[in-house]
Length: 262
Image 1 (tube, rainbow, N blue to C red):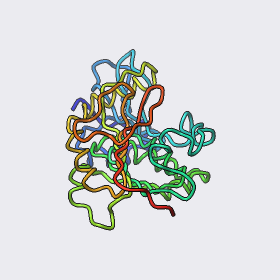
Image 2 (image 1 turned 180 degrees about the vertical axis):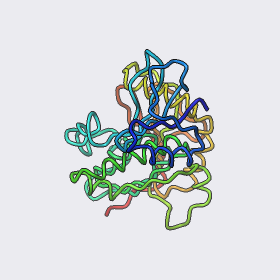
Image 3 (image 1 turned 90 degrees about the vertical axis):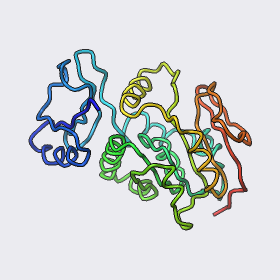
Image 4 (image 1 turned 120 degrees about the vertical axis):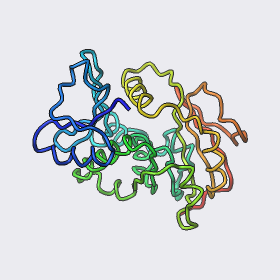
């Protein structure tokens, strides 16, 4: 893996060193990200926050899990509540807030939306690097009083989703399992492209999506929801019960039984 952990100032050194040891990666002191000969990507600890930074003179901006500003904050305040496509796909309506397992958490944006709408969401992320980004984002968000209630409904675990599903206890079985496997992305927006390129270099595509869907269908109490690019093929296996479609993405819903009201 062409990746290292770096720290931006001496106050970040201890945190960066602990992260490098945990991930078994080299540690760089105050790396110059403009240097093309530097490692391809650096997990940079700056002011306590972890971000994934490409290197080189024409590098894109950093990638991080951010729940306090930008598009995520705007969506929390003005996103449309249960009228959002993801809310419809997950069956959210008056009195219905299913427990959700986000088995492919990534940067946690969809999990955050669902938690904002009142669902308890347990997030799984198998990539140690992506998990570190998400862990950092949740830690930064914990300092915002407006987000405390939302964050109490979000939990994070580093785990392979298939293995987790095979060994989960009865008490851990969720009402709904949410899957957003990595697939070839056609969205041309710079932010999406930047993140997808960074993530693909780190973890590649999810070639086990068929097995993951099968495992989810065997465990979920009420439904499995799979997010896909709008024109992408469905995952091989059982056909979805129905689909909720947007401009650039869609949700394939596998309904197993009715969702219970609170």
